[in-house]
Amino acid sequence: MMKPNLVKSLSRHHKLTLFSFHTNTNAHNIGKFHTFNHLPSATPTHANVVKSGLSNDTFTTNNLINSYLKLLKIDHAHKLFDEMSHPNVVSWSLLMAGYVRQGQPNIALCLFHQMQGTLVMPNEFTFSTLINACSILANLETGRRIHALVEVFGYRSDLVVCSSLIDMYGKCNRVDEAQMIFDFMWVRNVVSWTSMITTYSQNGQGHLALQLFREFNHIRMNKPNHFMLCSAVTACASLGRLGSGKITHGVVIRLGHDASDVVASALVDMYAKCGCVTYSDKVFRRIVNPSVVPYTSMIVGAAKYGLGTLSLRLFQEMVDRRIKPNSITFVGVLHLFNSMNEKYGVMPDARHYTCIVDMLGRVGRIDEAYQLAQSVQVGSEDDALLWGTLLSASRLHGRVDIAIEASNRVIESNQQVAAAYVTLSNTYALAGDWENAHNLRSEMKRTGVYKEPGSSWIEIKDSTYLFHAGDLSKCSQKRELLSLLRELEGRMKERGHVGVTTGLVFVDVEEEAKEEIVSLHSEKLALAFGLLNTPKGITIIIMKNLRMCRDCHEAFKLISDIVEREFVVRDVNRFHHFKNGSCTCGDFW
DNA sequence: CTAGGGTTAG
Image (tube, rainbow, N blue to C red):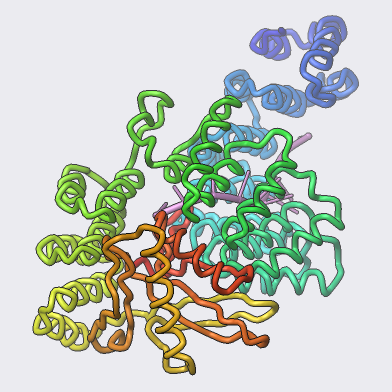
């Protein structure tokens, strides 16, 4: 391998020698690079060097830097750069992009800082690289500063710069700002459309993502590529829209993108989230070398539908195939919590502890859950999740004492405050302490804390039906619902579910006054039901609060038996937490 | 000679 410093020093001090050096030695090395690294344009061509070597030192060195970067030798590249007497904007941009690609976007930003101390002016390449760095870091503050410079230097209409800006704002959860850029663009291409669709999709705006996706297809400027299709499929997944998901799957196949592993992974996840684990499996089995991502989707999907054995089998299969599970995989297989660090070297963090608290809490081991929550040091951002989880478990098991403590911790975190109030109030109500329940409600009213009502929806044929929690007023068949529930209870008893409580529990607190919570088994798993008629007169039941629980699955199967029809159930109490920010939406409890 | 989009969780 040639020594860059040698090339450099020769080029600086012995310019005449440079010619012969490159002619003889470097030509040989070019051949080597080519052969060993399969990077056709990784090295400067002989012609480039000859043409510019004597007169343009910067150009030559840039070519060498570029070669080193393509060979992932960033240290060599940086060294060359440091030795340059006149690095230009290309030299700077090259190095910044190299660091971003290498996973060190912070260094790229530092380099820009250094660059600002020189007379070299940034160009559109520099900006798109820097914006990309901010996007990866989800560093909104710096992103905005660079955006300002984009305006100052007159690159606001550059297509690539705008696409990066959309992406950056999207990754920082600033949908409005991303949309502003998109709306003001004069020229757009597939990438800019994809950036916008992805921004919607990743920020809980699946409807807008699908709307924009449809619009793109409607104007027929171009066919969607695998990037765009991925985001569209993800949007369907987040909405639980099986119908749209199937249509998008059709588009994927027609456009020949079904061989893309990433698209296939998105499809696997979409079907799992829409409740069709069978379809997930079909798509999954077509992936020749599935990565940890589709495996995780399958494992989590199976676990959510109570198919614990399948979930664990998939996990075992994954491990057997030497695919390394990551921290997300473990969220789906918490049973293996203890082997996380020992066997796989993944340190459990706040998210995993929250899941354990959830698991202990659900089965009624509240005190252990409480102890664990207390012992874990998590960042303040994760506090709401951790203590909110404990709070809902306390409500489930009527532990007013822990509920008070947990809700205080949630309120202190300043996130999900309204939900904490409601849950605490409901805990009081369930314990028969109506006075405190009402006091809390009045307190909320007085201080203007408002809780968004939770909702569920179900997709049947081409229509989506929406229900609000507890709102059975539009349900014309309340009586049928009740008799159906009785039947369910009876059948569950037949299958050996002892300790089934009969009847309905009314939680009488204002908005949720009419919410009926049905205790279906000894662990007081509360399932709220909605009911509707399909055009064909078939009864469909919607279950709220479906969780990872064997009994849920049992109930689910029973309902399937009764309605004898494929249907989709969505877990509506979902909690969004976006990749790069602390933005939350949806209804956690 | 330099730049931009995608998949897994809670």
